[in-house]
Image (cartoon, rainbow, N blue to C red; front, side):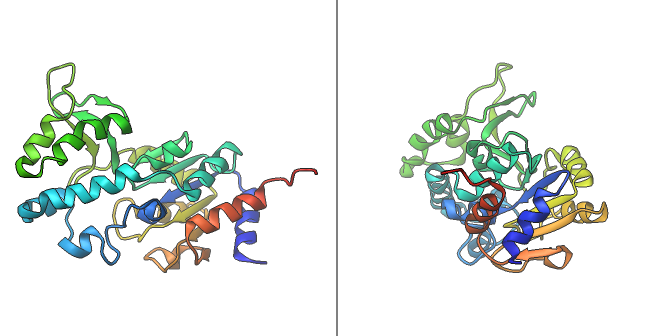
Length: 262
């Protein structure tokens, strides 16, 4: 039995499936992973994007323009769409993601736990109230600032964001290095109660997110890794599919979709 068919059989017989996704699932949408060759951390070092910008102020405009340009063009790819379809069919109950790109929601996934926040959602720095997500509005706000290379600054970028109804300034609601992750209690419950977890496109080195597959495994879940290369979680997984998620997930979906009568 091929690994694809084996995965489909396990998923179809599961009681509650959960997907756990990392940057690799969005690579085919044009968003480079942070840690792979050529990624942000590979070029400038780790410790979060705000620290990268602080250490390389002369590269701030170049880094942010490249980062936001990729996000502006990104759209859900076949892997995101397949997960949304698997949720609609009742095979998975939630997606736990480390990504801030909103692509799972745009693909149609309804139950999404965003551990590192959502770039297109705004959070008030005074009262904490959140707005969004709103992709189009976000780029309408920041593109004029990014296009002014001669007068660009982070301060100018912050002033482009909406003012909260309390009068406070807002910022994109992503988790920067050193900040607490979001949706963690809900994600832990999903990990503890699932019997199958799809571990997709993640390096497995960022904690506390990387602990969730360990929690699922400890609770008795069957772990299926979908990643074109080995990760820190490979040894934990019961089945590893060595191909891109954009190829594997649609194939799994096809195995689970009843053939239409001609």
